[in-house]
Length: 131
Image 1 (cartoon, helix red, strand yellow):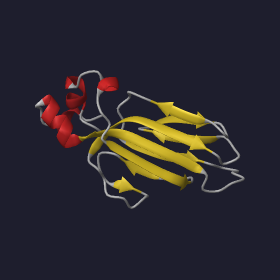
Image 2 (cartoon, rainbow, N blue to C red):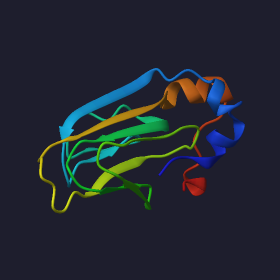
Image 3 (cartoon, one colour):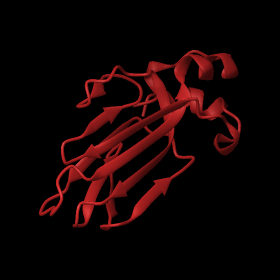
């Protein structure tokens, strides 16, 4: 969940820098990461950011499913799927069922730190407008 009121006040997302850049190699089903809070299954501290872009490389030997804020994406074996300019919070590797090569998914999550967004928009997050 991220504050829509902040996103609405940002200029073109494609033109903004992505100082929050997180990379996770050799992951598998059950991997979860929250950009805004909680960190997830990695144990890494949360950067308190809003994600703008994600990329996932599948080397598992089978089609996998990832879920980004409740939306499922299918990624074929050998495919690199990237989505840019779409704000997000939670990225999950939902299914790698039947994988011939375990721990073979690489994930990149890019975004902007919440404090930088607050400074840029001169607006505080409105918790009533989180999506």
